[in-house]
Length: 387
Image (tube, rainbow, N blue to C red; front, side, top):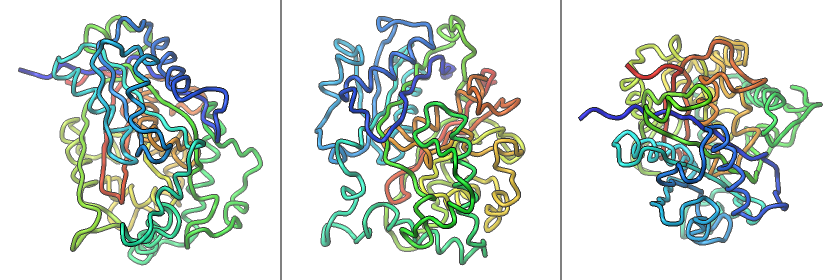
């Protein structure tokens, strides 16, 4: 039996800020879900199942919040499933929801991911003491900085690349009303002179800590035909993982990331991603990961990713716009960050991205990674149904 085509017909997100003290966790997720329903022209009664995801529970200190969020999400009496794959969870949650529609288990699914970082401290939550794990030197940046330095050594990239990415993404965020950081007075010089946190990663080259949620409504061909707005069609989606540590692991360009991208491209019939994909929403929590992932995802040859960044190709007006929404560097509710990448890719091909719309975007890639660069989830969406 062939798979049911899957369409994204509703997208909703909250305004992302350092602390949403005006709403509870339930109020936060309902805000995003309600906006997705309004976009899709649907009511709570039209939803057959709910799939949600978030980062580790200890980030907020609330264990299994999905149990008490069922009422806020209209899930009482309906199937509800929680997904968890560290920082990539927003992406993998969307893929699980898409799989339920593709397999004809459910016709219309609400998928949602969220984080309220203000109610905990994720940086110190990621700084567990020896002997339970290797020292991370205060947060994820301490873990990833050596891999960035390894990339610089291998590729010969100049030390200005990270600041170029951060400056680009923060300027893009000014076009996105939902983005957390709106730094009107930011200059390239300010990025380059910001404090060094984890050499070579500077303060302005890192993601913020955000409160926020993102929701999407996924449906079948019949549901898509009833949508009041153009749908985004899922042309391919995949998840891959590998151990955090093993002999021969390439932290600069993990094999799981390569395999995940290759699977998505195969499903979507993409043979030349650099030429055939119009926009990329890439999970870049530290600016140096843009050139690293450009290579990992097949947009550039090994050691050449930084040249795309330096040339301006990844600017919103370039021929391969990366993170026109401002990306994770501008908005980071950890559990939702991956879903935001997927949702923003869908907004691009629907032509509904507003001021950060990429002209003529017909196919877009959403990308998420998590853990010690061991979990990957990606989807490719298009303006037309898959062939």
